[in-house]
Amino acid sequence: MAVSKVVVVFALFGFINYNANAQRSPTISYISQTQIKDIGGTVELSCSVQYTQDYSVIWMKLDHGNSLPISTGSTLILHDSRFSLRYDPTSSTYVLQIKDMQETDAGTYACQILISPTNKVSAEVEVQVRRPPFISDNSTRSVVVSEGEVVEMECYAGGYPPPKTSWRRENNAILPTGGSIYRGNKLKIKAIRKEDRGTYYCVAENGVGRGTKRNIAVEVEFPPVVTVPRPRLGQALQYDMDLECHVEAYPPPAITWEKDGNSLSNNQHFKISHFAVADEFTDTTLRVITIEKKQYGVYVCKAVNKLGTAEGKVELFESIIPVCPPACGSARYGDASTLSTSTAALLITFLIFLYRNLNAQR
View 1 (spheres, rainbow, N blue to C red):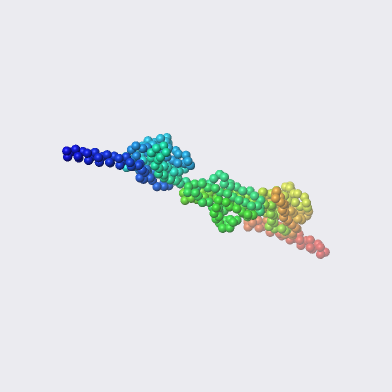
View 2: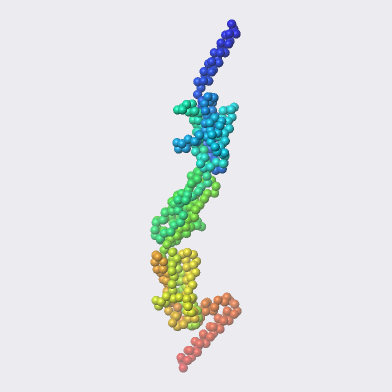
């Protein structure tokens, strides 16, 4: 009789314990916290569950309302060699591993217990993939404008975390907006000047890697500006003389030399040369060869581009003493031969001058 009572008690205890276990709902006891990884790295997402003997546990990736199933139970259903799944029965933990991470792997991952078609238990973990900054193709690449116009340059950068953009000039020159750095993705110049031309840099930084930058060439079109370093030059008869003009313009101008309204060209009397220092700067030289009386006078160097015309004037007058250079040729000044030639030329000229004066006094 005593034995039968013990059996009844154990049977009753087992029945109560069974009902208690049966009434317990499946739960997720642990889910990994937010994960931040670099591109090419590896991440592991853990999900521990309880009371799921009769239910399916799955990993999903949630993407703007679209769900991508990855695994069910301890079986991986996504055919991607970068993904793997481990199950630890002692802790009822499902570990999802992703290797060689790509930017597209970023997003929200959900560990779910399916109870019924309309009922589930779910926990989510955010995965962030860090990527060095990059500058988008829709950013400004180059600018060609006329002086005085409004200029707006744009720079759009991607990456994770979202990068910050700034603007600089070559050699840290002062920006038209003031200062050497301007922060923001747009740089606006209200009235650009020719001095503002050059190379600008859009710089994007987010703390991943060394950042990146893009060079933006800014060309400012402006009418020619002509300067004459020596407006009056004297030279003796039968000697050569170089007349010079400096031209600043963009686009590069057409440059001509004139005298008495007539355009000059290369011949036995004149030699014209142009030397482009840069896209905007050109030095032009007119050499008057073996000067004759009729070649004294005012010469005009003229520069023309689509935005305007400018000119400079150089007066060539007669002098008694030859000017070196170019009268003494292209020899190195300071040589004994050069000095003796120059001295002889000066002596001859002086003697001619004395002879003319003596004849005039008779």
